Amino acid sequence: MGQVVFSAQDRANRGSAEAKRLRRAGRIPAVIYGRKGASVAIDLDAREFMSGVKGISESTIVKVAINGKVHDAFVKDTQRDIKDGNILHVDFYEIEGDTLLRARVSLNLQGNPIGVREGGILETPLHDIEVECFPKDLPERLDVDIAGLKANQAIHVRDLALGSGVKLISNPDQVVALVKFAKAEAAPAAAEEAAAAAAPAAGAAAPAAEKKAEK
Image (cartoon, rainbow, N blue to C red; front, side):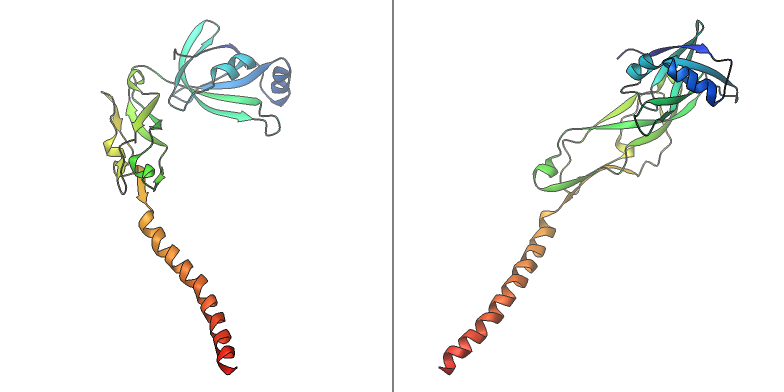
């Protein structure tokens, strides 16, 4: 997938009235924030942004072209209308190529674990990790092969293969994926249920036997 480029233009006026006017014109009001706290108000073509933003994660670097000047940035936040899902506002965070940054990288689990096929239950408590690196080294996502996981086995953050120049910030002992074996736990429960069901039947048989003996 090639790098996504959004065309934008400076937005001189701010405020709710201006934002509504832009949305009626098929534009999305947005702000691009710099590392030193500066911000620039811009607006984007709504259709172009809706199309380009699909599949973008928090660690995806996009390009924002403002009046011919290109900025590398993250899409940090999108505000949507709760009624129709349309995007109301976008926040970008500009990055600099020669400056270390911290970002969260999503985890993409791949494969059907052996332990699950044998009756285990897959747990995936972690969906992203935090790393530090230069923008050029930042992975868009990390693919994690979990097909080989057996019952009572786990993959931890420390087991992930990070690219050169990428420093892990998250706790290395956090669990990414774990297969718990449930068969051994299910057997006693099934036995208890069977015993509970049999008890009333046995109790009901006793009075019948007593009545027969009285005759």
